[in-house]
Structures are given as C-alpha cells and as structure tokens.
Amino acid sequence: AQRVTQPEKLLSVFKGAPVELKCNYSYSGSPELFWYVQYSRQRLQLLLRHISRESIKGFTADLNKGETSFHLKKPFAQEEDSAMYYCALSGSSGGSNYKLTFGKGTLLTVNP
Amino acid sequence: NAGVTQTPKFQVLKTGQSMTLQCAQDMNHEYMSWYRQDPGMGLRLIHYSVGAGITDQGEVPNGYNVSRSTTEDFPLRLLSAAPSQTSVYFCASSFRLDQPQHFGDGTRLSIL
Image (cartoon, rainbow over all chains, first blue to last red; front, side, top):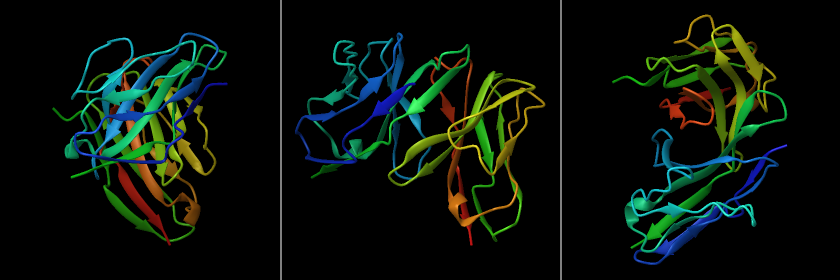
C-alpha cells in the first residue's frame, strides 16, 4: 500500500525565514512525487514534481529514497507563499492501475 | 483555455436528495478523478477513470456513483445525500496518472 505523511498540519513562519514542509512516503517501487499548492479559495495547482528537478517560486524539493522523504524547501519565505500545500505520490497499488495518493496537507502561514 | 470545468460551484441539498456534479475537460485527458476535501483529512479519492467506459473505486466510494461515457465528461452522482457528504469536491484530469493533475475550481456542497 502507498501512503503519504505530512506530519505538520500547520506551519507558521515569519517573512524572510527559511521554510521546510515535510513529506514522507511509503511505497515499495519507484514513486512519482509531486507538491501541489492551493491558495485561498482557489483550485489546486502543481508546484513541483521530483522528476523535473526545477525550482518554482523559489521552492525546491529533493527526493531522498533512503529516508523516503520529499521535503519542500524555500530559503526565504514570502507572505504570498501562505497556502495549503499537499504532497502526492503516484504509484501502482500492486496491479496495473496507478493511484494518486495525497497527504493530509500542511497549511503554511507566513507572517509579516 | 477552459481546462477542467466543474458545475455547479455551490449547492445546498436536503438529506435524501440526489444530484449530479458535473465535470468536463477539453484537453483529451484519459485519466479523470473525483476527490473530496475535508478539514484535517486532505484530499481523498472517491472514484477515478482511466478512459471512456472504465471506472474504479477510490478510497471513499460509498454513496457515490460515476460513469464515463465520453473522454470529456466524468459526472459524480450522489444517490441519497447525507450530511456526512458535506464537503468540497474537486475533479481532476491528466494524460496519465504519473503526469501532473489539472484540477477544477471545486464544488462546495452542503447537505442539511
């Protein structure tokens, strides 16, 4: 079974401080991992996927297979980063069908 | 430039009523899915489809039906609404499950 754990429901930082949103996963194969972001009352949108290894809006995420983690990081948080962040894993559940599993989300608040 | 379109945006139902949430995409995506979003629970998969004529259950399918007669449309039916189904419902689509998901704006549903 595949599982995604985001241990922090809420995370509050001050503007300019570094931020790290944690994501751990459980999966036996090679996962596809994503970070999605949802700004207040907007639709979810893709922020990052591990395969692209790019930085979006200053955020980066590195897949650590040894620690089964895909933490999202930004060196200097901005107020406009305040949003709900979801980590997601795409993988096969043992058969031929892939499933996308989301974590419960972390609400990030960046204070002025 | 429509992407994924969900209707209605808001709906209030009485317990026992039935209704259909509509989802349409114009990107020729094979994969479509329905999620519900509840506070503290993140996104939970209700049903999904890997192509026209093919549907399968997700994590929380009870009380919901789906069908996929065309590639574009993936309606979600509530058979007999219950207060526990009060939630925000999101439809998503992608070419494949290991590709980024495109989400609709959501339907905010209240069951009284």
